[in-house]
Image (tube, rainbow, N blue to C red; front, side, top):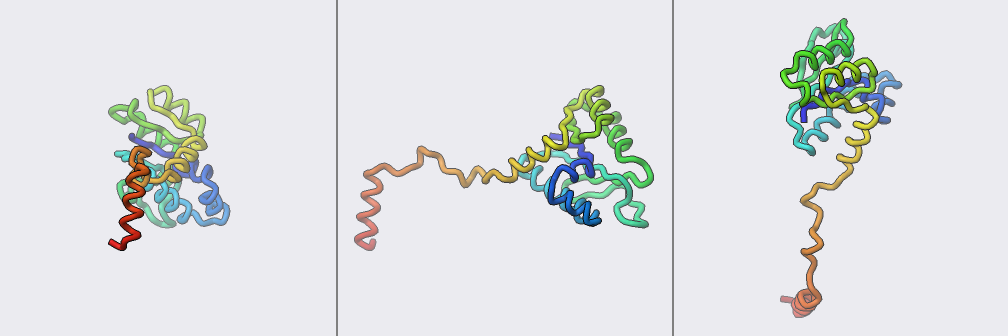
Length: 163
């Protein structure tokens, strides 16, 4: 899975991150999103995640690209992140492999024209929530692994004897 994420658009679809934005805690909202996306990508074994944010990383910081674990992070500086996202899609060797996460109608229309798989931010936020709420598969027991009544009696007797 190759995700292209409109960062701020998705932040506003995740209630706890949206609260950071309204409290003027921009950095906390961005880092929170990156942590969530990192957990999500590890759970689904996603190979590539690219997140685009409007503006600068920090005041006075001219960084355009950065990384957070295996996530590629882009800052638009004085441009709109929408333009960076469109360029990324446009110059991708295989746009059909991209899943573009946004609710911006202009980006969605552009992404569809180039053959990507657009996902509304609201829907993606729900997918993330469900995926991160699931228990790891290793913890789930197969119903076939239950003990038979005979085995239960055997173990009860064994424990009664103290062996």
